Length: 329
Length: 294
Image (cartoon, rainbow over all chains, first blue to last red):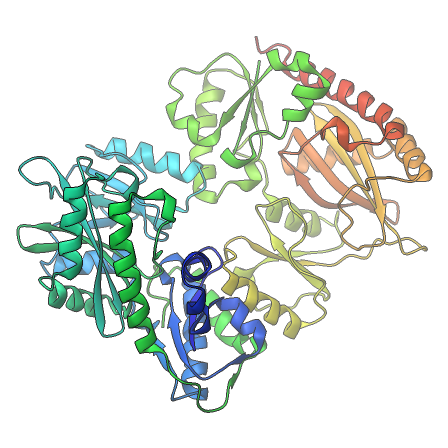
């Protein structure tokens, strides 16, 4: 059995999939929230995908790390995926890729000096996967106004990122965004969205036979697989979806979603797009079955009170002002 | 005109009041979301009622304070001054330290520390019911917090609050609610039940409870003490939720964005006259709040 762990906010990616399309899949994958498994009091031997760090605050992250450690010690034969001490936050990932020369654009927190920012930029959050929260902004004043608006709307300024815009459009002004899953040792291309809008999403993407054909070729292409795997390695993520575009031959990483949705609702996409979804769905399930470990060995006992010391230590680190991402592991 | 400012998800607390009870107020009150403040270039001539301050994060409060500077400089009336109003934690801590409340409240950033058990845990920026059951000791508190934090509750927002037993000899808890609108205190409700965190109005209150509530609202017995507590909190508009112990007010919270009226259909026929009276009194108080701003 594979146990897929997500946060309360992020729960549902797996559950929706087997509710909608793959009922038998529920026999090999069970989705639980992190607090649910702790409440259960035991972790059977199996495969554990620690998903959804992208939605966690540093204290949650630290507690997930403790859960990892307890299961690892209690059940050495279990396969644990996405090590909490290796996974990078979105900001760490994008800054790291820029510093390595792999991404052409930089990102900044609101608390960083912004004098060197290359405009235009847009604002998004470092947690969650809601995409851009602003249009393209051309000055620090515009950034401050938008940031204030978001803070007043309830977004924690610690989570706001300023992202330099990178123009990856082709000669016809069309933007392409690719998505590829990593599932353990496999890379599975998932989708290609094409749009004339710089923020390429499913809702604004072109829906034509030529795009579906291009997407189909992408699903079968092995061209980027090696580079994609090395980007996942850089991020410390063994299960997730890399969203990227190409600048020439160079992959420009937008994010890695470590709790990605799988398939859309059948009626929300055209038949051509759905054919590609089905193809991906079959490959996805095959790859997941490859991660499944038969239960062997006793279950690991879990007790919330045993996490108290770690919780207080994590809170102490958090309140002592260490930046997000350093209170992990 | 009263410009009623609140957070995006809680902008319509006065909706039933205006739509179902006192439609005349529609011409008096306009609502504005806090995130819309960044778009306000010229300040309309109005009374600026900053509701829902308790839900703002500290950085958001700083932005609102700057806006309040502009409002004050322009000479407009401010109700619930953002530069002085206390949040839930500051209020409960201040009331304890000044001897007005017998129980203390803690942020997680203050732990580990000696607290008086039992305690309960709730969110500092939310007015919904208390988050946890009563926790009798440190082990129970730790276990609850681990699960709550893993669940994703914001560590910046969690408060640990000492339980204060205010039950009477029948083991019933009475909780009063009273509005302050400017200089007036308007008693709103009396809830009674056996649960320690009695918060929800009974759908079918007993005759005795309705009578007790009527007597409470007519006599307004804690008026001066309530005004003092609102002044201490720096709030001119809101609803205080409290109980009485040893003849003194014990403050649970001040909700600075309360829902004054529910839909008419919620109330039983015998409870309606009281609701009508309160709605009219509240409307009159709001009108007088705005006098002089136009």
